[in-house]
Length: 291
Image (cartoon, rainbow, N blue to C red):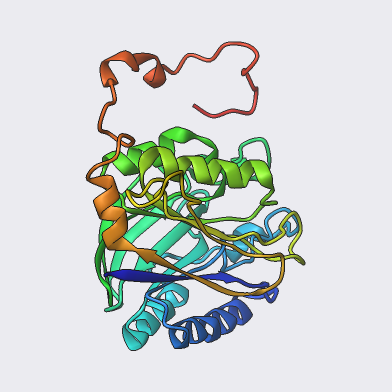
């Protein structure tokens, strides 16, 4: 059986780029000692998602191909472990909320910028991503098709649906917000309806508006040997700082995707034209929304 071990680095930022770099490297090493194939950081690790409280947050942006990211590329190659590192990415105009995923050879295989920025808050000052991406990720447990969402992206079912349609088996979700029952239910639903595993890494208690609750759902709700449905939650962390791991059974997931009724098996895309309309009516009109 092919098992993929994912480590969610639910850790506190240090207050500085250099401190976050050093702490991130240390915890990646610990994750590898725990047998991880992939290590995932919470949202915007380079600055600890401090944009609400630091007026100079734009100055803290780092290039996605700069020294911060390169250190994790080198580390991924050394540890032979994939690393999903997050950052406030420096761009010519406004920075972006970005995930860069390195495979076990230190090669960048995916760079994703948050599509659904929180425009009702300071994230209105960010550059929005313009697409969802998937990539073949080489791990010690073999190749897996991976996609990404970041935090608020999860609140739109279209995000995970697009990734499923592009072949994603695993969706990585860096996060920075309170993970309460409704947001956890969103993740459970996104996994269930798309038959994809979803791994979310949040900040622990001690970061404003965060409370841990990092999670992994594998989406496999039914098995022939079970009379009823199965709990798809492999992991729900508590509020404390730590490294939390879960093993995803890729063989079981792939068999399930090849036989169950969800995902793209019985969709009727011709009926969904309204989904691509840009028209917004009350009660959803917001003056600060970008289209």
